[in-house]
Image (tube, rainbow, N blue to C red; front, side, top):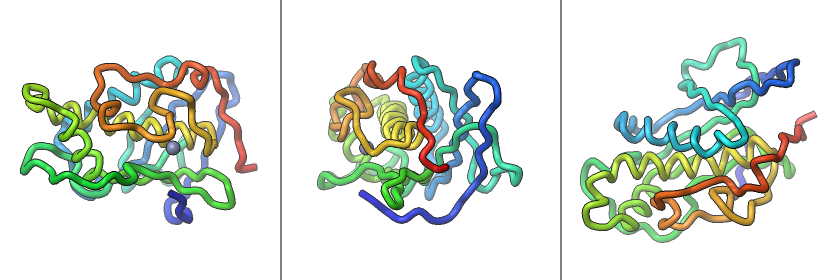
Length: 196
Ligand SMILES: [Zn+2]
């Protein structure tokens, strides 16, 4: 889904040295998730990108430093309910789990995640005893969804990988699978700057 970019703009400065600065994730939740969901999400995206290697720092949008940050930026807004702790979600028709802004064919820094769709997909994909760890599994699934959008932003590409979390669409079973990875071919890719 394509949307016009608007809102938060922060300057990103490249490091002079060959070392990659961490990617800063500026985030905002419509409804604050439980810590177990948030922690599992951060751990999963970190695990997925460890092979690149790439680290992620998470900063709330309202705490963004005025001077900006070093390195690449990803901005993520989480809409809806990012928890499986209350009433089980109703089945949601298949739809977009998340999307990243594209303007004039150029990938922007802004992603939106539909937590209601992700939580419905995760809940329906879990069975029996697996649902005891539903919050943690939701966090892992959200980590995979954000990793997918970060892939578009970091590599400035609208393309998708042949496999892994950067595939065109993530199925519910892939959101809750014990194993997930970036596609091996994509790990070695270098960021391309289309903003100049
Ligand atoms: Zn995509």
